[in-house]
Image (cartoon, rainbow, N blue to C red):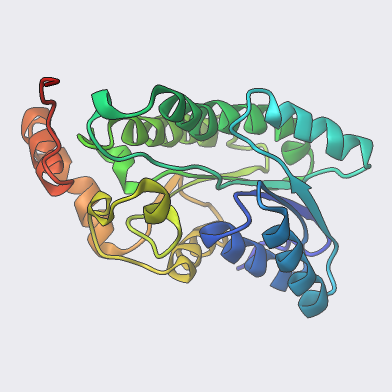
Length: 268
């Protein structure tokens, strides 16, 4: 059974690359109208043209930096003024940082927290009444990094742990409402993530394509009763759940070594 989204409107953040592009293509093939949100207008316009021509759907482009405080509420107001009501929301926008926490730029990690947590919560909150009314979907993208502390990616892992716990709580609250809530936890994926992070060492697990991750998401969404969380890829599932068998001390030590053994050093 597949969810019938034909004629509904799906908002996708981070829609200029990677998973966002693949989610957009899948929903367009199913006949959904789209709202594509990202910073890079040229990429959004190119994707919108592609989807309109291939699928005869309505595609609205919204250029916005979602790392700015209040961007989620501003987006909701702008769409409301245009007469656009969103039925489903894919919170895909996010980025990671890699390296010693003490050596990271404070402004960058605060932007990471803003985008990965605060804006995701804001968007979920402002759009939720419409999502429930439309019996739509709320999909939040977390990560296999959510399942244990991640030395070397301390802030990123913590933000994704928040997304995992927050979304699973919403899944429970949404029972009986008609709203489908899902957390998607990819492992390393062939997107621009590692270019932004600046290191391939930030990836632990088997590399997947964006298509494989979205396959996993749609397989869960198409179930009569969607689970609260899916991990994409068997090896990633094993990796994500293996730390449950270890003490927290052992789990964080192993993860730190896998991520490049980044340790705090005194300043010269």
